[in-house]
Image (cartoon, rainbow, N blue to C red; front, top):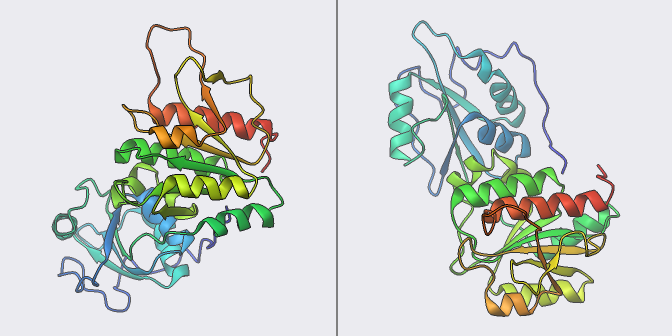
Length: 289
């Protein structure tokens, strides 16, 4: 997807003086906006600033004694300046305390962005994106897949493969939390992700729109990858790490796919298996960019 925002003048003095509303280095951070989330680590913060899909409140960066900043943070400072986001330099101790107040990862890599909640999309937006690109839809559906590391890794692959959208079930499903954003290395910020009340109902709506649904399953009745034509409007459905697809979800798939294996381990991690199928679907489209 398009990544708005470009590098600005590297002569920015954001690390030497606070931007609007900021505090002097080592001082107390500004009052946290209601409902704000804390994104930490360089890749997630940079992608959030580039995408500009969230409300972007305040960027805090670590500053060493003597006013020196980390030169590796310069792309983030450039992106913040381009997005008009206030930058506040803090010493490491103050930044550690701020991360703790946000319950964020203490390994923040010297950067913390206070931003609004994740902006979820609608199914129509995903199908509209495919239509604007003049492409057959390629979607990812997660059936109660849990674990921020699993979800983040799979979303990172989905963004790399150019999927038009990701669909989660609202009830009993995980949110796109800062932890998920972190494990996805910020890929979430460039993805259209929807939360639906009923995943099966969403699947039926996609079928009516001409999208075929391929469920990941290790059952013997599933067809092996390579025996099915994936070069069509496609939604890939990945289930829970241990339990697989729920019965109704499984029954509403047009076909089931399993990955051939020659080793002794019975199955692959759900995120790994889903990633392989995403790349296989993209390959059938000629790895179009």
